[in-house]
Image (tube, rainbow, N blue to C red):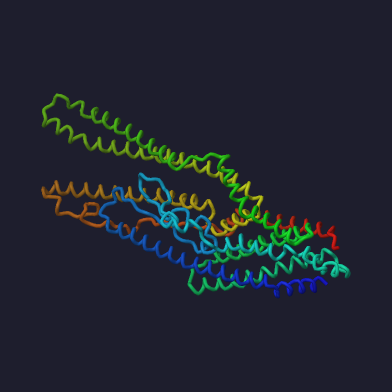
Length: 492
C-alpha cells in the first residue's frame, strides 16, 4: 500500500505545473551558475598565472638579494564554482618582505565593486533560497488541500494508516524535488569534465557531500511544509504562514545573528590595528636612532682632540665594527616589531573568533545558516579561509626571508673577497662582476616557492559535523511534529 501511495503522489506531482516550473527554473539556474562559475574560475586561474609569471620575471631580473621583496598569490580552487563563500571578499595576494606584515589584498570585489552589489548566484544560493521555497510550494497544501477537495476523507476511509499516508506525501514531494535537482547537477558535473577543470578526488568527494547536504536541507522544508499543512485547515493560511517562517529562517535569522554578535562583542577596526602597529614601529625606530647615536659618540670619543687625519684613520678602523653592531640592533628591532605585530594580530583574531562563534551560535537556530556554514566548509570558502591562507603565508615569509638573508650574506662575502683580491693586486674593482654588484642577475633557481595546502575531506567533515547533525535533527523534529499533528487532524 505504501508503494502505491508513493507512486500516486509522485505521479500527481510529475503531472502538475509545479513540477514543470521547478524543473525548468532549477535546470536553468544550476546550469547557468555552473557555467558562470567555470568561466570565473578559468579567468581567476589566468590572472593567477599571469601575475605569478610577472613576479618570477621581476625576481629573475633583480641584481641583488638585498631586501628583495616579492608577492605571493592565492591559487583559485575549483570548489569556488559551487560555493563562492568569502572567496571574492578576501584578497588575492600579499607582499612578502622583512618589514611588512602578511595581509591579503586586492579582492575581486574591491577591484570590481559592482559585482558585490548583488553578489554571485552559486549552487549554494540556489539550494538555500530557491529550492527551499519550492519545497514550501510543493507541500503547503499537502494535507489541508486534500481536506478541502474531499480527497483526504475518501482516502482515509480505506484501511490506510495515517503514518503511511504522511510518509507517502513526504517521499513523493522529496522525489519530485530531487529529480529536478539531480539532472542539472549531473549535467553541470559533466561540464567540469568537458572544460577540463582540474578536479581532484578530494574535490569530487566534497561535491558529492555537498549534494547530500543540500538534499537534507530541502528535506527539512518539505517536512516543515507538511507540519504547517497538518496544523492548519486552509491552504491559503498555511502558505502565508510558511512564507513568513521561510523569510524568518532564510533571510532574517542569519543576518540578525551577525548584527547581534557585532553589537555584543567589540572588535577593533582595521584603522585602529594599523595605528597600533605604526606607532610601535615609530617608537622602536626612534629608540634605535638614539641608541645608534650614543654608540657612535662612544666609538668616536677616544678620537677627540686628535688631528683630522688621525680621526679619519680611527674612524676607518672602527666603522666596520660599528656597522656590524648597528645591523645587529636593526635585526633585533625587526624581530621585536614582528613579535609585537603577531601579538596585535593574535588579539584581533581572538576578538574576531569570539564574535564569529557568537554569531554562528545564534544563527544556528536556522537550518539555512547550518546549511550555509556546512557548504562553505566543504567549499573551503568559509570565514577561516583568510586566516588559514595568511598563516601559510606567514610560514612562507619566514622561509623566504631566511633565504634572502642567506643569499645577501653570500653576496657580501663575495664582494669582500673580490675587494680584498683587488687590494692585493692593486687593480680596480670595476672589472669584476658578481651577483649583487648591479652587473649580474641573481640566481634564484633554488628560491622556495609558496604552495597553499588544502583541507582534507576528513578535516572538512569534522568541522561540519555539528551543522550536519543540526540539519538532521531539525528535519526529524519537523517530520515527527507533522506526524503528531496529522494523527490528530480532523479530516471533515
